[in-house]
Image (tube, rainbow, N blue to C red; front, side, top):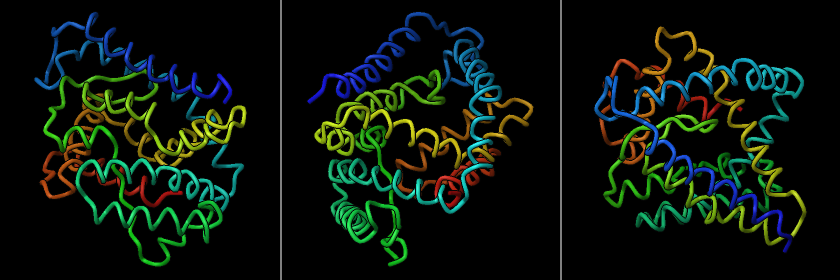
Length: 259
């Protein structure tokens, strides 16, 4: 096993853990307009930097990607990316006691990884087998761990203490990345992380552009995040009644459908 691949996950986890400590140490409660967001002043600063980088660098790159890469090819890329997330969902469904969902997710992964040629073709979807998504932040929520203060992470965007902890856990415990590590191919994990990031940003491109047109994008993004995470943890059985419901619905639609 090369030292490069494990160190990539280690660096990602250490950076996220460091961000928690940094924000906790530097942020002050002044100026908060929502009790769930006591560090609003700090968070707004990070959000503004993220938005500037996105609008001036990442967004134009994604527009070029969407213009150059045909939709059919982008769909294949999305299929592979989403297939590689199935093992993480499977693990979290087991941890949440969702045995039936875990079996369905395992079946999807096996079908798409074999008959679907490594996930290039979403045969499981064509067979009517639904895709579910679960992460370690959701698992911690299901176990009764509270959100903790809201925080905006550089590049990662909206989060909270619980979900950032889930990101750190994922950096070490994602079965797909562990499996890629085991292949001992230099740079393979870095490529997987990069492609995943590009694909996710591409599928969210329209919603993000609409977000930036809002009078206060920060508040809109924060409300949509609260709603999306609550909805995910309660498996859609809770009501979503805030004025940001349209953005929440658009976010869900793009993640599921826009390839």
